[in-house]
Structures are given as structure tokens and as C-alpha cells.
Length: 299
Image (cartoon, rainbow, N blue to C red; front, side, top):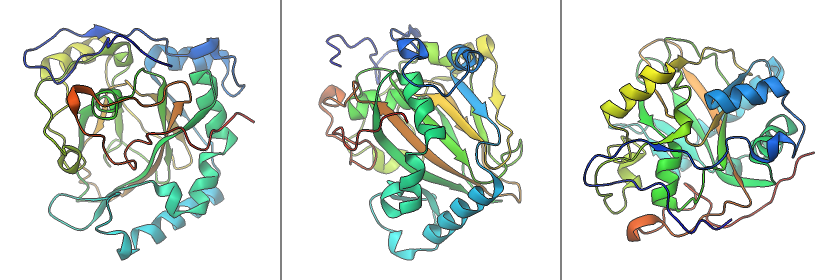
């Protein structure tokens, strides 16, 4: 899909109003695959996310948790481009392209319980835009500030349209105290233009602490006043699907309970990346796959 007009300017010099979304939320009326019920589709379309409980059983969760523990202990990954450590330490915060480090995660990417939902919502075959494991240890896990993934992917990666989604597979219980994902219902219906010219190689800093491409406090307040704020509380084995433009973040984890999640970002094959905006150099492929590879179809 080629988008001739950029409906979503950002990284601007002066504040702008919220911009209504142009694209649908659910494509092809949710008929491309069969995974979600009509009520689940309606909830996703209205809120911009869907929490599905008990998708994976305890044995499966343990298998993936053990695999992530193995990766976390692999010191050869520290210092690699796709390994992001916590500010001020070598503790791994995020491990990108995790499916390329693990055959188990590669299988998970293609699991119909995830893939069919993505294809149904996006109305097409898909490919992996990004995968990552997020680790938030007890007591020391740092926050991820409020943001829309699409704003970054649009500006810094050249994603044309809002036709991608993330799914987070919970490998530990997520509760109100351990830095769980927080989402703003309904925020996916508005693009939030952000202030500030993007520095070169911005990703090297933003993956530890993002300062550009974040919504203003006024816009956040407006969106939360309209839609509220939901902190996901769900057991390990649950899955959170959320639209690429849904505003989300998570707080510091000062509880004793670690939080570990696997993220898969599915992008429509009709939404392949174009050139980044404003003359920016493309970010590394581990952040955004620049070519459509390994097309995935519903099963």
C-alpha cells in the first residue's frame, strides 16, 4: 500500500491538535481469518486493545519462560546491537529479534492463537515488523514512558499507515504493582503530533529513555480524560493485543515480582516500510524489518 499524503506530521516545532485517525481499526470487516468473536472484535475496535486470558497453559508458559531465562543468561548477547540494557547497568532491558535467537520463539510467532488474530484484525497476510523480549526485574525495572508505537514507526521507520499491531505474551503474572502495561482506551483513534526535531541515531538513546516522540502532558491528559486509563492485570499465559497507535506505557517495577513478556509486532504485507520522514537515516532492521520477509498466512 502506498500512502501519497502524510496525514500524520510529527516532531514539529510548535504544538498541534490531535489528528483523527484516517484508517480503519479492523480491516476487511474482520473476515480475513477466524479467531475472534464479533464481541471481541468490537471491543478491540472500540478500545484499541484486547486482553485474552489463559491463551497458553502453564506448561507452555514454563517452556517459554525457561527459554527467556536461557537467553537472559547469555552474556554473549550483551553489547550486541539488538540487546538493550538498563540505564546505568548491563542488565538486559529488551532483546530484539528474539525469534532469531530462539527456534521456540520462531514457532511462537507462527502460532495460530496469535497469527490468526493478527491476520483477522489487519485484513491480510502479515510479516514480522519486530520481535522482542522485555525484562523488568523486581525492585529495579525501569519505566517505559507513554508513547504510540506508530508515531515512532511512522517517523523513524517510514511505516505508512496504522495497519500493524503488537501482541504481548505474558510469561509472568502482571499485576498493579510490578510495572504492568498501561493503556489509554480510545487513544488509537487520534494521532498525537509530538514536539522536537529528531536527533540522528536517536534510537540509541530512546530505547533506554525516550525523550523525543512522546506525547505532551496536555495531550495525554485530554486522551485519558476521554477514555480513562487501564492497567492490565492478568496471569501468565494471557495475551494482550493492541493497535500500533494505542498510547501505552509502564511504570517502574519497585515490587519484588519480576515481569517478563514476549512481544511480536505483526505488520500487514500491504503496509511495507517506506523512507523515514524528514530525511532521517533508517534505523537498524532489528527495530523495524525494512523488507517484507517470511509472509505469514492464517491457518
